[in-house]
Length: 158
Image 1: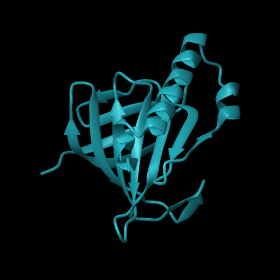
Image 2: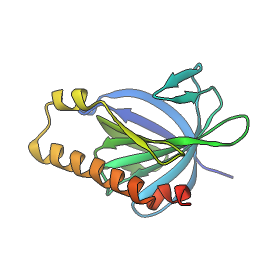
Image 3: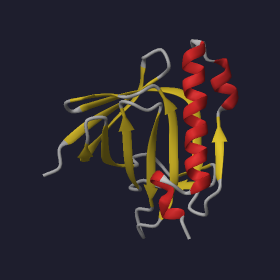
Image 4: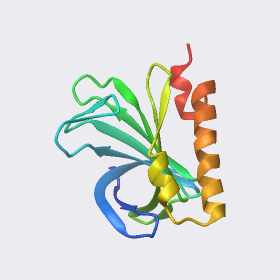
């Protein structure tokens, strides 16, 4: 039986802004991968048509400045793309994940192209210079992985 887990999305100040549940698929010393279901009304977001019931496979890392959500269609199981949050390393505890979102996001589409989101919002955050540097480095690392079709984006390889 899969173990339930509660995800706490926090803003950059550590204040909870959203909470939802999923089930743990796998866990390592520095990450947890869970499955969650999209529980909101249908919305088209940056070219992704998100529908109630879509399957999200979410990986949170305690040693990286990002998390990655693989999004699958609820009807046909097709991969819709990846939504990557730039965030401080997650706190992974028994039954809980805490992730401090730093506004920057990256969407990677199944065709292999990508889009960076919320640059303006990120630049307005009152972050320490080292946090800004870590966040920018994480975004660069994800873009490099997408460009080379490595890591979570290997599925894009021809």
